[in-house]
Length: 565
Image (cartoon, rainbow, N blue to C red; front, side, top):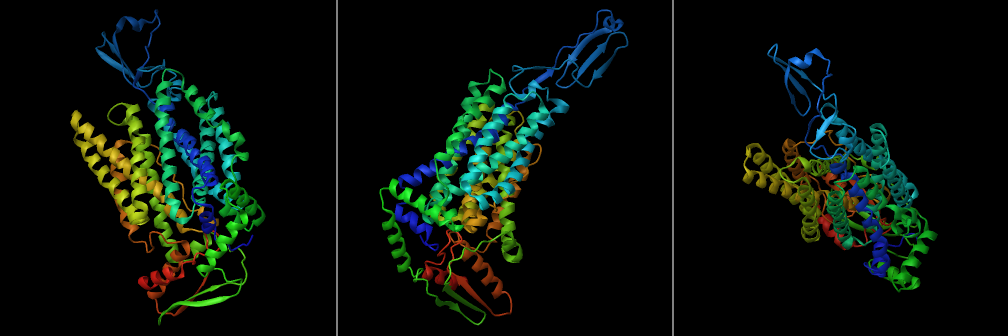
């Protein structure tokens, strides 16, 4: 099995939606459900119901008893009125704990008394999970690119099962917070490895479908969380946590259920393992291995991307400032890229920074809206359910727009929609007062904002993965450390960031469906045209997605370069 076979052509020869690919992707899509469960479960297991201080009783022999005329219980204080001195004294704490509108085990906040001055600990526990995601985003990506997608996926999923199961029985807040941090690390490893694998399991023209399906499964996890929380609301929060953790028990058998990414195997020169995977896929799809390899070579030969190992040089474009030369190298060594590839090139770095900050905006806005659902107008269960269900519409919008108008315009539309909607929602919130009409309008525009930001967030995974090479793809999505507290007034921040970064999408100089080689080449050509020097670019036929043939459609790329220059 040759090193420089085009993996996209292999998937096409196998038929993109064959039994093997569907089975492989089902496990990746299904992994989005536990990620959604445990990332957003804090909305219910950390719920802070309305409360007031529990009754304060003075000793019978206390001389002050005779002088006390009344006691007023507030949410965080007790005020004692004296009929002798005609004055009052306030205890700025609840010495006997709290009295809740709900039962006292409904969440870890009520069980451990994390209200009033201690309420920040609830937000801190979620922030620790998000901090863990940030660490996991960097650790797991490096491990995934070195050891493979499958080991990271399996270890992360089993870790989630064990950590969340342990959380169900943890007796103290400190232990709970520590477990939340490591759960965040595992969730990030599972989520990114799954997304990367299902994007790598289809050819370029079908990748958007896998991303849309990923959003559908993620949304299903959010929607399912609502009835589960509703059914368990009369029991301790520990039972809900236990139920969610047990839904990942199948992770113990995942090693035998799916294979390593074929694209990663070939990108890293592990051809024997790649051949085994391909033979298995051919058998499941009722194809023969030899026919698939023959079809791929024939297609590549037609596209002039495979020439018997002989060097072939072709001038794609020339003019006084730029000469672009394409050639097939005699060797097929795997060239790997690192973060230094980005950091060394100013223009590539600038465009990458824009992508990273768009990720910050998407993450901040998405999780902000999701986690503050219990503070919005109306029923907390319905709010969370509808905010989640809106993501089905986001998936539909992605499916309709990604290939029709391109990735960049789709992202601009969705981010812009989120920005406008949250701006209007902020205005409604400022003036709604006790008006139920304005309250419902406020919720409507928050829902539209969730529609926009969900689609933008999901599209960013696809957009980013298509821009960077196989051995860098897992590094790029930077995970965000969100703010400790979320309030409805943060809609102002959300809408401003959405608009700023939506506009910056149009600063970026790349095409909606370009590969990373076209992206890197375009940035360099634009940079050359802005300078004085004459540069000659030698473009290798090396697909950074699949180890060969990013320039397989030479004539199309030639036209793109001409239009650009």
